[in-house]
Length: 156
Image (cartoon, rainbow, N blue to C red; front, top):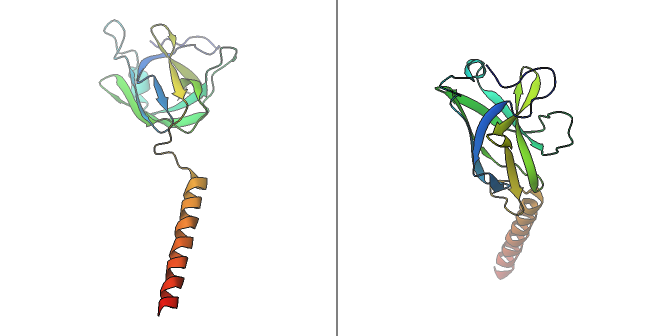
């Protein structure tokens, strides 16, 4: 039995937790589901379907539905518990809900108090590509190499 019912979007269809629940872009976060409720594996059907694609959606309490906006990876299942370790993507600082693509719809994750929320804090870029900085460094290195070769030629 899953917690989502009816046609309207579920506020918290899958229960889980984030560790840590606040991180900068490029930092690693782990999402785990509860193993079950009352000794029952409520996620058996999801686990049987295989890897579950997960996403971040900007937290917006006025949103009429759920969105699978920014992919963060695929949750895998072991003994009824889903896990995903993911690197926070390069998104603007703010609050984000974790969503899953299930049967053509996006379901939100929740915790015991409501919708599960990841807070992306300012700063950080570990592992996040910064092409403009990289291009600038590469251009500076090429210029320095050319200047060094020109000096060597003149010294001969």
